[in-house]
Length: 184
Ligand code: SF4
View 1 (spheres, rainbow, N blue to C red):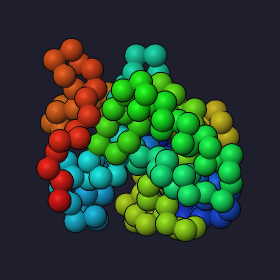
View 2: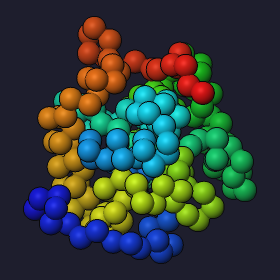
View 3: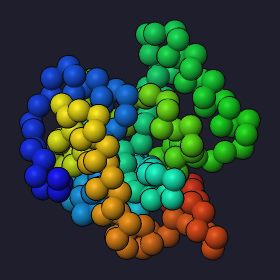
View 4: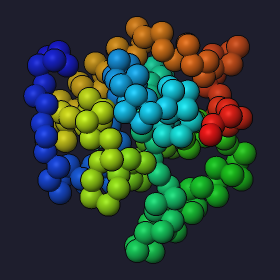
């Protein structure tokens, strides 16, 4: 099935929101410019403030996604979530890893740690008209469809030149953080 064949939904039921609290959906490459426009930022600033370089598969196809906001967990009412978030952030710091935050790249562990999307405000998506394709179609799909959608989105990123333009890799094609980008 192609991406265009999946039905776009406008649903924001508790099940959908529960995904927003666990793992943000993935953008298609052509959705990044409209997102930046929606936020009234340039693409580089959008990445620095809100996105992360996530990846798919053993070959690591890189793509952009809203970052998980671990700080929100630090203020969670649930003590276990607070503890987990703080341990996770501390371990990154101890290991000297400059990853898993906006303007950076996702570590191997990132996919396995649940945290709310940076764009979730209360129970609402703050970029709803510019939300990622995956958010528009997947939350009520089964696991097989979600996997297929992610695979197809990753395939589009593999063809895209956007990440090259954003200069997110070093000379060895390893992802690098954009910490020093002068973001207002
Ligand atoms: S972008 Fe919006 S819809 Fe998608 S996960 Fe984030 S808050 Fe939810």
